[in-house]
Image (cartoon, rainbow, N blue to C red; front, side):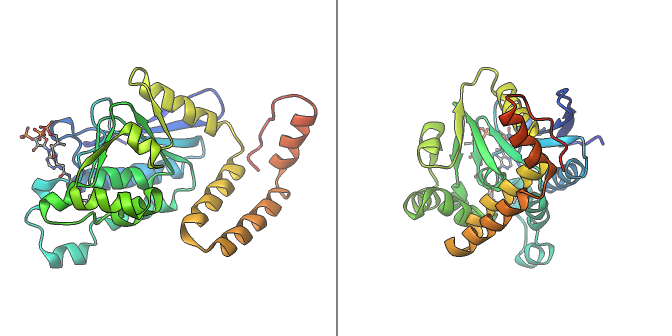
Length: 263
Ligand code: CO8
């Protein structure tokens, strides 16, 4: 499908599993997340999720900027009742939440406000050395209303989340990695190619095992340790009902690469 505010493409990797690459395409406004962009992103994610040829998804803003937040021009005259009735930001958050394929946010340049929040909705963030993260909503007289106060606090702890939300300052990639907001920092050169390489290495694994791993890690964000451990144990036991567990362990013992059936 052709979109106006994003570019969505399948990157064939000859591994039996393609990579879905979504690039924001509003460079003139630093990829501000307009209503249209969010709608198109939701659609692209849903298409990728339903495409069995795809093993992983990468979301990026390109080389210069990830996204400088919600589109302030569009948002400035929003009334409370419209915001409430449209529940404007719910659709994309639900699409990402329901996505069972691994989703990586590849962040170069600014990831601010809704941009930072969107990155945090992905499974993990890989940052280029140029990345800058922030929740500057305080400077607009609002708050991070797309999960920023909640996900940032879970990822980096109360003290730093308060610092970020109350001062509106930015943190660079080094600080973001140090405090657990991002998984890795990569050099600027060939950044997106390297992230696609990581997505490729993920997509080459057993799909049900990936799904179960993702569900288990996500449980850790949602439940008590007791319930999370129980969930994990049951999922672990369930892996022994898959053909891929038999194949993965047989391949190890026979000193060869596994041939996943994704079953
Ligand atoms: N919305 C709309 N336009 C923007 C945005 C934005 N968020 N950010 C930048 N632009 C536009 C600028 O207006 C400018 O347009 P023009 O050339 O027509 O003047 C163009 O992009 C380039 O921007 P700058 O000239 O400002 O570039 P600088 O390099 O000088 O500064 C900054 C870069 C520091 C990133 C600066 O642009 C900035 O501060 N942007 C706003 C950041 C911000 O406050 N983000 C939070 C927005 S609110 C939010 O995200 C709420 C989230 C919760 C709801 C989520 C719903 C999606």
